Structure formats: structure tokens, C-alpha cells
Image (cartoon, rainbow, N blue to C red; front, side, top):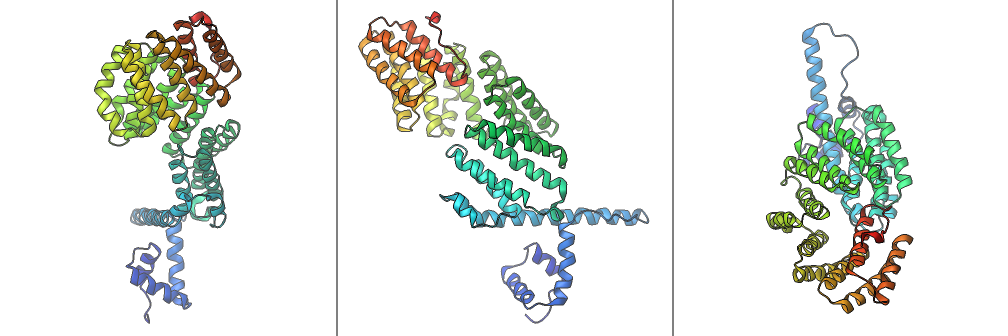
Length: 448
């Protein structure tokens, strides 16, 4: 290449909007230390990196309009540049972030760049169900990247947004990994940074949404509800009914956890009316599944059966393996509530085996006790006794909390002595169900 590229080509070069052959030619030309092209290139680069309008006073309306047009044009260039940077980083880092041993690999990757920052957060979110520890690792690296972004490129307010987002995702990852004290610290950092940022309402909604999950895990339900109400109102103001509905669905599950399943049904229904199932099929499954869950918790089994028939095709279509097991579990519970013992037995047998295969010990043990209860109702006392003995051994191996283990010992002793009743087993099953959502639940023999 002998002639110099034009200023327009140099700008397209920085935006990576050139054909690949021309891009390579300009790279080679710049590598020859062409001072003339470098002198042209540098102010274009600064213009792209700084979309702020000039500070000096403007002489007239025409000049003012021209400055506004220039600012918007530069902002669009800046936005395109960031999108291209993100796309390049995702392509470059995706194999690294998805690989095993990501902690060691990331030590070899320069921790800088907005693209890497976004790639880390995306991959962290992608592994939230499978590997909470890896989720924490990736989020920690995202915090490091955010703190190393250049203030002259993004400005202090945008940097505060990036850091707040990273700390919020780290807090959520730590919550998922059951490190609640560290999660509290991370959320504190995120919420302290939020007022220093650009005031982006979507970022505020996201942080409040994630923080509500932490508050719900801490069983600080009133604070969780207040946070979700803010999330709901922000999305309504932004005309995003889907995300406003999602906030209601999350509020419904915490309402259920607080012991108010009837109120949870009403909230869940309101959320269902707002969400777009095509936009997020997993959320639609979550809403429909929880509607059935709340009905079962209220003892409204006939209504739950009708809802199950109505939603079963879409639920089965969107359910993954574990969600399919949970749906089948609800089918068994509904059948038991309707005293359809044979149907309940088939469903609970399938569920117990499925949870054991999936390594979900507590779920397998609880569904085993539910199966023993179905056998008790059918008069199969010996089969129920064997299942109870086996299940108590599982709970011992799982090291469940002391009070729960004590309740299981009472249950086992009653079966050993031949004094166990259907009512006692029902009380134990009900207690373990409540224990899933309330760590402070107590075993009360008066429920028999």
C-alpha cells in the first residue's frame, strides 16, 4: 500500500467497519510508522472516545444545532465502537470462559476491556444453575475488570455504573453459593456506587431485583417486597410490562415463603397477565408451576388439577430435566390430595427415582416420605415402615439440621414400635415441606 488512507477510511478502521483485506492493508501501513496517518488518526480516536459537546460558548443557534448534531453523531460512533468491542471480546473469550479451570485461564488473560467485562458477566449468569462457585469466580473477575476500565474513555459516572453492576452480580453469585455475609458486603458496595452513576433506571431495577433475592433468602420479606415494588414501578414507567410482571412473580414466591399462599396466588395471577411467554419461556414455566404449587399449599387440589390439565402441554414443552421432575412431583401431590392413590404412587415413584439419579438428596427423601404416606393410606404399613427407615438414613447422611433430624428419629421410633399413624406421618411430611421454605419451621406433634 503506497498511498495514504483517507480520513473516512481511518475512522472506519477504528470502527472496524472496513472489508477485511482493506483493514489488513491499513494495519500494515500504520506499522510502517506513517506519522502523517497517525496525526490524522489520533484526533479521530479521541473524538470517538469522548462524546461530550464542547465547553466553550456557542455563537448562535446554527452553531448550537451543529454542535448538538455532532455530539449525537459522535455518541452513535462511540456506541457502535463499544458494540464491536464487545462482539470481538465475546468471540475471543467465550471458549476461555466456558472451559474448566477458568480461574487459572483468566490469570493469563489481561483483565481489561468492556467486552471482557460483559463476557464475564454473561458467562457467570449462564452457569448460575450448574456451578454457583464458578459463578462467584467469574463475577469477581468482572469486578476487577470494571475497576480497571479507563476513566478518560468512559467517564466517572459510567464507570460507577459498571462497578455497581459487577458488585451486584457478585452479590447475587455469593447468595447462590450460600455465602450470605459476603453477599451482603457486595450488595452494599453496589448500592453505594449506584447514586454516583448515570442514573440508569434499568441498572437500578436490576440491582434492586437481585438484592430482593438476597433479602428473601435472609427472610427479610418486608424489605424484599419494598425492593420488588420499586422494580415493578420502574419497568411500568419504561413501558416494559414483561419485566414488571416478572417482579410480581418473584414477589409471589416470597409471599408464599412468608406463609401466605392465597396472597401469592393473586400476585402470581397479576404477573402472569403481564409477562410475554415467547420472550422468556423459562419465566412462563416458573409462573405456571408456582401457580400449581400455591394451589397445592392451599389444599385447593381440584382447582390445581384443572390448572394442570390446562397448562400441562406448555409446561412439558418448556421444562428441563429437573423442572420436569418438579412438575411430575406436583402431579403426584395433586393426585394424593384428591385421594387418587394409584396415580399418586406412580408419580411419586418416578419422582423419587429421578431425584436420586439427579443427586438431589433432600428432594428424593421428601418424595420418599410422601410415597410412604400414600402407602399408609392404602393400608400398606410394612412397606411404609421400610421406606421411613430408609429415608431417615438418607436424612442422617445429608446432615439435615438438628431439629429436623430429631423429628425423623421420633418418626422412626414410632414405626419401630408399631405406634405410627397416618396423622403422624402427615405431620412429618408437612414439617419437611415447610422446612424447605422456612429454616425456622418447627415440628409440632399436635398437628396429628
